[in-house]
Length: 194
Image (tube, one colour):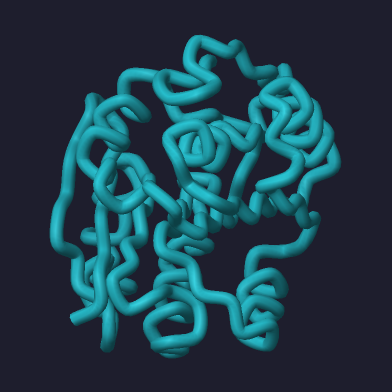
């Protein structure tokens, strides 16, 4: 796993040897950043399920001004800290160890808006859907007016949800899915305000 472009280009990042953390593959990350490149410059970035810090640090490398990297696992936080030190990006990164819902609630109370939000939760959970619903229900309190959300999931989860006919990934009061990309088993969905 490495930083693909920008000021930290080619810098190798640490990844914990555990099944609990699943970093975004370099080829998926490269495709993703080519799609969202225009949103990154001077952006405030939230990586809610940061894992290794991979996506947030890639954004900082490409010109984002600030990244909040959150995870609730000790091993992930240790990895994020070491990767932040490797890239010497401590001055533009804040690391928090919170459950995703507590992190979102704290953001609402702190009056901080993010231009780019990465949601890359454990695939077989509703954490991503719950996060999208929370952001939709709190319009103007988490995501900036022109901001985007990138939700990474997999085909199995999408099919499972479709079979159960519940919690559609398209049905949010204030958010609309404007793009869907598939890379092998990985699905990227991009959301903006309606």
